[in-house]
Amino acid sequence: MKLHEKQELYIYNSLTKNKEKFEPIIEGVVGMYVCGPTVYSNVHMGNCRTFLSFDLVFRYLKHLGYKVRYVRNITDAGHLENDADEGEDRIAKKARIESIEPMEVVQRYTVDFHNVMNAFNAFSPSIEPTATGHIIEQIEIIQKILDEGFAYEKNGSVYFDVLKFNEQHHYGKLSGRNLEDMIANTRELSAQSEKINPQDFALWKKAEPQHIMRWPSPWSDGFPGWHLECTAMSTKYLGNRFDIHGGGMDLKFPHHECEIAQAEACNHISPVNVWMHANMLTLNGKKMAKSTGNNILPNELFTGENNLLSKAFAPVVAKFFMYQAHYRSILDFSNDALEASEKGFHRLMEAYRSLEEIEVGSKSDFDVPAWRQSCYDAMNDDFNSPILIAQLFEATKFINSLKEGKAAITPSDLEIVQKTMHDFLFDVMGLIDISVTASEDGNKLNGTIELLIELRNQARHNKDFATSDQIRDQLLEIGIQLKDGKEGTTYSLN
Ligand SMILES: [Zn+2]
Image (cartoon, rainbow, N blue to C red):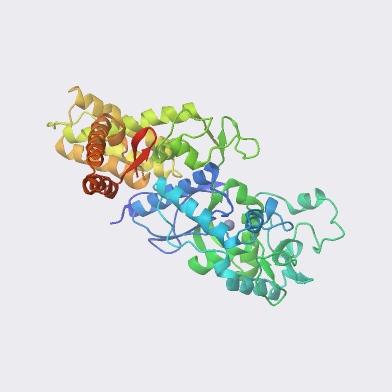
């Protein structure tokens, strides 16, 4: 029997604004799509929070025994400045400023994004499709929407006719916006606009001569509208109706609203069963923004190279910190809060490690099966990771009294505690025990490497370069990199 047959998972659906019992369309199988990054700059911490929230969802669904196909796209074309239908493509703009090819921009920041996600120990999605790799599919969808009568062409561009769509469907049902209000609150269209109504959005844009990212289409040489790629890639890999669609809260409108409209216009079916939205990350109580300097990049966090930080924080500590808030709540990032999380993180890891040394008895002073179920109950309640973590701390208290000889546990209960801690710490939250290098063992390791550095220096002094190179290379092989500098030799753990 799979775990998901025993555990009842409830997920908050942004579309119905209710927590609903999760039942996949196909028994035992889950299709999940999450809007990925636009790769025109380094991924920022707010985006990381969204992707780590869905890493938790992905991991928990897998833990429950579901076969999950997780699709997360890379936006490498069509996303214009200000999320608008006019203006420069974000990637093309970066390429112009740096005098490089747009695909060099895409490559650079896709690699950065992957490195950061790996550092956080996030799983890769099952499929990571790109917008530029799916131009043909996007053109096909535009043609279908035109055939259905919900779009119009103007001077080589194609726009979605929101008012026409709204006559038979409901535009605004996800964001809770009302089309009449939207119309009342918008200014008159500028004379240059090709749109019939300001609410209409671009499906295809004819490229201006200076626009370098362009593809041929039946309407013009141009590029797809930003919302279209997600409709094309989600339905291509997950079908016209799939289980879960996720993204940051800021994508609810217009991006996800437009995705629903496109898919319904094209396939006559609402594309998604459960819409999930992860909330914002603020920094010291304020919105993170590059322009104001109230911003921390993941790499600055990992190295401590930012004035807002007192030290470096391990990626998994930052991840643990994020999971101490529910994904639908706003989370404020600060140096103090991170330091507090770091202590808690080490307490949990320490408790887990010490389970190895616990002596068992003939009774248990802790209702282990009930505690284990309460860990599942937390996650079954819309992935409530802060409650899960509180439950793990409950176990930590008990483990500490076991260590002090103030409580007892049976061998079978100890096994359950060990497995449950392992499952939730490492499989579901994807944490890594980094304490080995940060605590007493770290001192031992440090001493050992210092000794090797000293031996290497002696070898170099004796011109025995074979030995000195051997020490350096073999350390590198096990992930310890020596760096020679003015101040002597230092090392880092890769
Ligand atoms: Zn999207």
